[in-house]
Image (cartoon, rainbow, N blue to C red; front, top):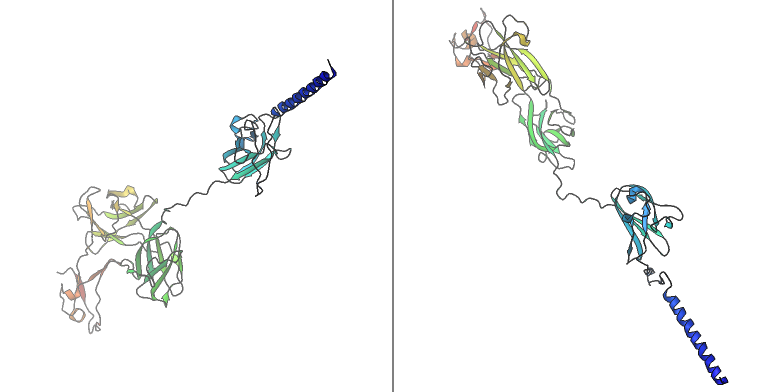
Length: 435
């Protein structure tokens, strides 16, 4: 081989070797493992998303209250997913109760795990039913966590109306005439009209007292003034307690107080028993009793009846310290001196005491239900006497001398005015039935 040929052969071998090295280096670049992405910065300073390998597995392992399993590095339910928008792996745990929880991010084993430095990562949840979002940067191995509290419940678009009750107001004043009730709620709203309020009604059953049935009053309490129709005759501001359905006020200027129990004797009223004559209960020297009761309250009381102004009709005052709803009339053994049940000859059924003005129960037979309620009409009586007293001489049925029945006392009365002194003899009189 000539020198020239040898020289050309050497050059050829050199280029072959050079080209082989270049190709080998290129192949090495092709098979370098892992991402080669480069992080740059946006103009705003936000990191460019990392080009992470979405096939990499990261799993959150921690306490059972957070993860559902206890420090299980291979629990697939807690596997993180790659968020392509942020370049971070994420896992959201929802409905987490308030408390403090520890965890780490793992590679699916305990070979590699990441937390707060070399320690577990700790997160505190302040409210029940919160969401906990855990993030992991696969490049920097940084762990992040975010707690989202549950949304507050939306307000009720149609809240229930405030509870109301009906209240019976009783009031009395020794200094004023007609009375008014003026009331307002906690927000200052009028409840019974503008000042001086609503006129109250005279109570026919309780002398000197006035009454008003107030409807739809606040069940949680309210304020009240009783007045005589003007600024110079009014009580102080009075507070009515929550839930009270009946009250009494003894009014005085600049003063007064609210009571929720009735004055002594408030419930006392007279009831009558018409025994049906000598063919029914009014025979064999029987006497009569009333048994007042309230089974719901466990209260009861016996009271003996007394003769009224009408033959065969007996009367009894209801106990004044309690509003009994029921009465039972008893025909008692003539030889008995007390009122236990063992001395009873006959009895009515339990009777509801009327509230419509009826006050007399008339026996119509021997059965417990043989009877009816009605209104007692007392017998008519007249005063007959000398002319100086009565205006006419011994007239047995003079209308001017008719007696009136006083239901409060159970007595008939007649008042003569400007009567002259009886001289030389006293005045004489008799009470007649008109004959």
